[in-house]
Image 1 (tube, one colour):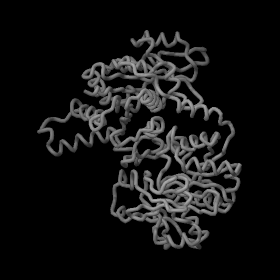
Image 2 (cartoon, one colour):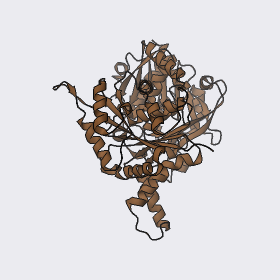
Image 3 (cartoon, helix red, strand yellow):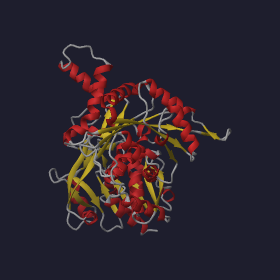
Image 4 (cartoon, helix red, strand yellow):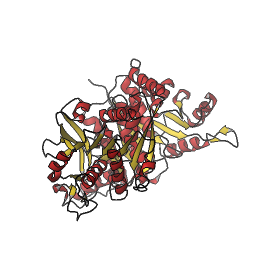
Length: 534
């Protein structure tokens, strides 16, 4: 008889952006390293069905699962830390919860009952929390609740957690992450915000089992003991998450404070063998030793770290495995022109032409692609970035002065990037693109086939527009090779210019598949090429 699935709920208090996603990922990594099978899911209180239509300035990047769900960026952390592959079941919003309940009501599933937050909304939340464990047995399901305790939007989620903890007894625990500020004027840490946050949590019927105190500076044991005393938490169940050189140091910091052991004890689990963290320690050692820099430019329109989070992390990880520290420079594509492009890219050993939507900043990306191509600067175009490479080549090599994407210029005669036929009748914006993993055949003799070391791959997509295969022969003849194609539709997935040091564009998003222990081969090879330019 298999053991019951245990549930770990991660909540936050005092302020947002404390790093619940990193803590959840670290917990998952530690339990996984002990031999347990885990999954991690994110429940976001906002009413959007998913973050697919949100501006990155609202919520950072939109991460995409293999099965085509647009999700919160924390799922990227989950996958990078643990190597698990998340699905649509790992990301749930208030919008999805209410839509499901309303759809059931319209079908008559509730037999004329009055639909209320309790029990109907809370029951649907609980059903979703358990959904991952129904199809496949997990030892632990870690559920991160977005937002901060006290937010009006999160109240139904907190009630659902309260019910589940009551129903499950020792099979469920709450880990509450709070902030301990340091007041320079007083010269001391203040625990009162944490006490109030725990009190707020207790007011909805949840007593935290474990407290994690987020802090910029190291906390003495006396501070931890004070928090334990005032918050009714065991002293060995109050740990700190202080600022560290890298987010990948967090699992080790949590391990040293025996967070995983505290979780197992609270859940009544017999302590498993010590975690196997050898590969993780090896990565951290490589990261520590990588002190020589390689400078990479991110050509895009969002001057926000989280907007290109997965790309940034993929570059950082790939650089470590090349023995380098990646120093990333944002290059605002809206400010690029022919006169300043040389200055904008000065000192860079390579550029990534970033993905995105809409016309804003696209001309700057085209100019950057042209500069990289004509100066043999390693360039990696991702999704829209690849399309800008294709448009630049059409204008400046094929001689199609008006070449463009039908997204930006529907009237162009040289629509080298065009909308997919099946997308033309779609009117809803959310969840209607080409999403998730699609197969791709890599052509024999191509650079990308050598990089991957295999002939067939599957990568994740998030777009509506495609390379227009009507122009494929002209590109091939002129030197831009279409080296990756979908085996079912023959859509072009990858282009490269073999004569250049490294000039590759992918219609898909390889950054979604890069993890700490297995960095994506395209990013590793790109960084290797960039290093050769130093």
